Image (cartoon, helix red, strand yellow):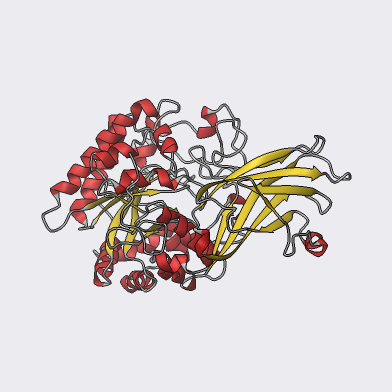
Length: 513
């Protein structure tokens, strides 16, 4: 299927976003409860939370409302309410007959926002207590991911690999989740559901052959929503999925099939925890642009595991990733886990939300500085830090240079959707573990040699401060729109250093005209 070549953004290579929604904000149940909302929670606290988001340019709020067999932000006579301490702060409201989810919905509508309930289809977090449905049916639980790979325990880089995820092979598991969604739709008049696929759902490597089971469930959910829709209002069904179609299918998620059947209204490809600048978002473009399904790729608070709790995504980084999204056919952006980084690190909330005003508008994104960061997420999917070789991450790019070899070289691939005729200046920076000030490298971008430093020569003072870093002003003709090949050659190795020189971080700074 070819990408549709119409409806371009004026003065921009990207596509014109469709529809009216640009910022889909996912409100994590526990992080918001613990770090934003007080104990006990009152209706006014929930309303002020919605106001904070609306004032920041959010137009669609997704509140996670079901997770690991528990209901959250609403209580049902049929299903178990979350037993964790942070969710007990909602009990006074619930005991008084007020559903927090309804308060959030009403305020969202007052502020002109759509409101959806998020359903986590599985969760890899280790809860202190699990729902009775999960505990009473161990035969329906999936093995741990590292157990499937024959690993004694997961590496430290792996995240969200615990929990008690359920096996959707079983009819009872699929039926249970559909019953929860039906009860929620009968209890709260939400504008739709977002299904959150960020874990495993079938035994590996059997997932692909069982994808039809998940598709059958998606048809049932679509039917539930259609039954409650009318000519003036179609209840939405969104999905949050992995950042490549291959990973989706590996986990039994036939996203192209869902789009082709018209089962989903929007799709949010993303990594589980990190903003992946190098994912192939463009492969989702033909699927969504040739359908009524919108695409809202995911933006997270960090670029990688190594940057977690050190430095959150800056506005320039957010604009760079958004620029890539719009170039690949996105209709907007899905914000996930944003609060985690920006509630802990400056500029904090609500100031950290203000960048959404830029991200809503592709032209504002294109008109301001952009900072691209290509580094190993160590959260690559589907293994959450365990790749198919059990030694790294799925989406990691790196160049390994053997110091004992003569002029070793390697290639680092990255995607950059920049029209250089509209760029005032750009700089490429690379960083290598164990690189010293005495190491000499030659760098070519798409065959064009790059000269180091501001005057085409190395700056010894900079090497004293950052011996592991090199930077190169980018000639206008060097970058390609889309895929780029960065060739790195070690021309002279530090005689005092040993081991391989590993380069796995590349950054590009872009200043538009």
